[in-house]
Amino acid sequence: MVIVQTRPKRKLTGSCYHSYRRKKSYEKGRLPAMTKLGEKKVKTIRIIGGNEKSYLMSTDTINVFDPKTKKHTAVKIKSITENTANRNFVRRNVMTKGTVVDTEKGKVKITSRPGQDPILNGVFVA
Image (cartoon, rainbow, N blue to C red; front, top):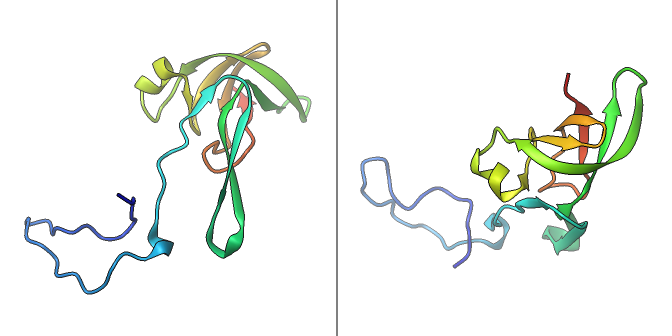
């Protein structure tokens, strides 16, 4: 069955809304990407208008911004230490925006959205 991003079929009281039209293809949704720690894999899908959207399935490097030197460097990720979105994501090695990862140069907080972009950016945590 298709994931649709429309209003629910039921009201807050539990009664049904009367349907006035069918599902439309532009209302389709997708399952979350669940970007994991591992060898880099990017998935590309077709979206409305024949355009393409890419997102990360897994990666093992992160582009880190150092505020002291004002430079970006690519650093290898060792492990995931904290995830504010869901504490079980740490055990499953799932990365989302706001996840704190342990790298070769220290702890880094992810600032990009890996489920929306094919790149992983972060900034050092003091």
